[in-house]
Image 1 (cartoon, one colour):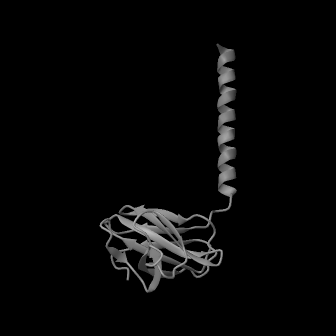
Image 2 (cartoon, helix red, strand yellow):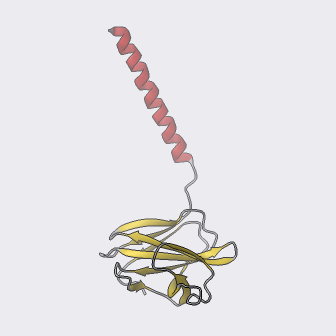
Image 3 (cartoon, one colour):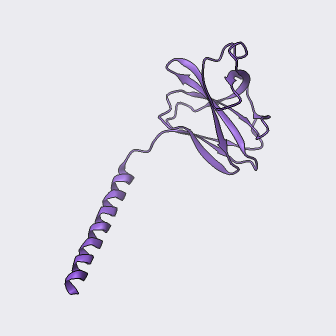
Length: 147
């Protein structure tokens, strides 16, 4: 019985040491850069994002963001100063627009190029330009008062 307790005690210490080691490794790792959108409205929104990818404009969508929730829409280090976003309500009505015309689709999409949306079978939408000030990580807060 004593031998079994000593063996169990050794296993518990090993688990605690392993957990502490794992925690130390995680806390010293570099934080990931990203572009996060937080929905601070009371409504569910659908979000599309535009950015330069390999020197070409590209739009991607859709991310569904619940009320008072955040979503990482770009998970890698930000290399573009400007990110473009467009949001609709669950009925497809624009609730966040800007002045930069880019292409979207009704279903999930990834579209290269922003010119001639209609002739290419896409929908033209006005995206809001977000200046990230060349930061590696940025959070945009979507509120009822956004332009």
